[in-house]
Structures are given as structure tokens and as C-alpha cells.
Amino acid sequence: MKKLSTLIFFAIFAISGLSQKQRGGAEIKQLQSPQNPRIGFVVHGGAGVIPRGSLTPEKEAEYRQKLEEALMAGYKALQEGKSALDAVEIAIRILEDSPLFNAGKGAVFTADGRVELDASIMDGKTLKAGAVAGIHTVKNPISLARVVMEKSPHVMLIGEGAEKFAVKNGLDIVDPKYFWTKERWEQYERVKKEREKQANQKTSKYGTVGAVALDKYGNLAAGTSTGGMTYKMFGRVGDTPIIGAGTYANNETCAVSATGWGEYFIRLGVARDISALMEYRALPIQQAVDLVIQQKLKKLGGDGGVIAIDKFGNIGISFNTEGMYRAYINSDGKPVVLIYKDE
Ligand code: ASP
Image (cartoon, rainbow, N blue to C red; front, top):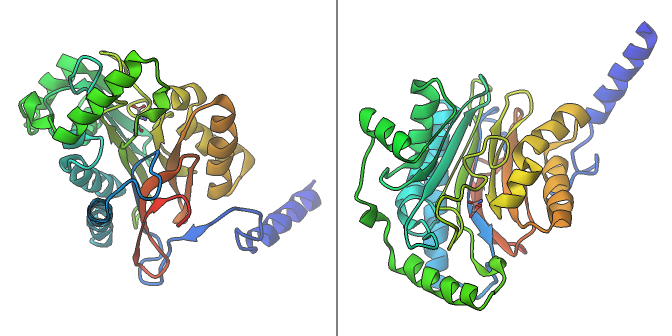
């Protein structure tokens, strides 16, 4: 028995000596840099139908600039010794304050022309989590999710109760009009017409934001924030605030933030499934995200993607849409900002 376990130990040792590419992983990106051996940071700004040419060069530059700003802000926080949770919250707040993304300021409209925001955050060290859904007046739902995690005995608060809790905790409260943007309103009217003609739901673009981080203390965290899907039913809640579907973090495995057609992500428990594949099947992170997104999600008919990071700073990114707004720090400590599938 002892001999067998020694053999297994050496076999595992030999396998882990191979690069992840040799182990059969798809595109693997190492985040560890010599200066910061154990910090890593990834953000996303949603996945969806983003064919080349659909964005003007100016719009494309704006997206890239904002993603990089959020990425660098979170990364700087990690470099300064802040926690993975802080980095995630800092970056997501920047994306929530931008009208470009479907979260906070730039949220999409529900079928009855209102905004209903969802967000969640999770701490991989303690497995504590906080989530909010159906928010109309809180400027930064990600911060409210964090307050729910840290200052309430619960994991999720919704609607009025969540908003009262935000006021009590001194968060920034805005008039719901703050969330009105011309672009989203036009998108709402377009989708409304399409729906009246029974068009396919896939025509609506996603744009949720999320971040995953590894701090220098070895802790992982994940967060996600969204306005949901354009023309969603009043009261609909997607995957974003569901721990294990849109967000998950566990120091033993990985941190995951998802974006896409939420109903499918809930049904598959996407974020937790990725963590489970690493925990029970010891899959490298890129293989785990690919299995869930490229195989399981695709098979079920859903679309979208995830960003993930493991305790060593390896990252996994996978999506089955034409693009995904995403950014990460590469092994030289440089930001990489990508939009399309083929870049
Ligand atoms: N997953 C979000 C939802 O279903 C939408 C998105 O990612 O853009 O609410």
C-alpha cells in the first residue's frame, strides 16, 4: 500500500512537471511574474454577439481603454497588498460606473422599461458570499453584495430589503433615472420590436462585468455584476447573483466569474461545476473551463463564457460566443486586453 502511494506520488510529481500545454490543456496563460509570484487578476465585460466591424474604431478603443483601466486598478491594489476581494470590488465598480457595460450605469432595461441590477461576490478563503438581486437605486451593486457578505448573516438580499440595507450602510443611492442611457434605451426598443415578431432571444447582446483575483496571501475572490438580459421579465433573476452559477471562489480550486444566457448557467451550476472539476478530477483550469463552456453549455444550447484563476495564478478563459470583453495581466506583468474570438 505504501509502495503504491509512493508510486502515485511520483507519477503526479512527474505529470505536474510538464507544461499545461503538454498535459493537453488548451491555451494556458501564466500570470505569475518574477516580481509578483503569486498575484493575478482577470476582468471581463461580458460575452455576446460581437462580430468584427460591429464596433466603430472609437467605440472599440473606449471598451479597451475602460477594461484596461479596471484591470490595472485591481492589479495595483493587489500589488499594494490589498486583498483579492478589494481588487475585485475596485475593478467592478469602475466597470459599473461606465455606460459601456451592462452593469450599474449602463444596465439594460427589463420588458417594462426599468432597470433591475444583480451582483455577487465570494471570498475563496472563507467561502463566505454576498449577493443582491432586483436593485433599482444602488449605484454600485457589487459593493452592496460585499456589505451583505460582511455585515449581514445572509448570503442574498433582494429588492426593497436589499436597498434598505444599502441605505443603512451608507452606500451611494441614486435616482433610478441615473441608469437611463440612450444606447440601452434604443437597444430596448429594438428588442421589443423583435420580440413582438417572436425573434430569437440570442439577438440581445450581453455585457455583464466580472473579475477574479489571486492576492499575495494566496486568497482567491470572484465577483460579477449585471443589469441582466435586455427585455427580461420584471422580477427575473439570472445567474449573476447565484453563488455557484455566475460566481464562485474557493482557495482550494479557483475563482470564477461568468457571463452569458443566465438561465443555462443556473441550470448547469457553471461556476461551481468548474471548481468541482478541479477538485474531484484534478483538471487544469483551462481544461475545466473548456469542458463546461465548450461542451456542457454548448450541448444544452446556452451561450456565454467565463474567466477563472487558480491558486497558482494560472488563468482560464473560455466562451462560445463571437467575442468576450476580457483583460488579464500576462507573465511579464503587462495588460492584455481582448474582444474578439480570433485575437
Ligand atoms: N448572465 C447575465 C444574466 O443572465 C447576463 C450577461 O451575462 O450579460 O443575467
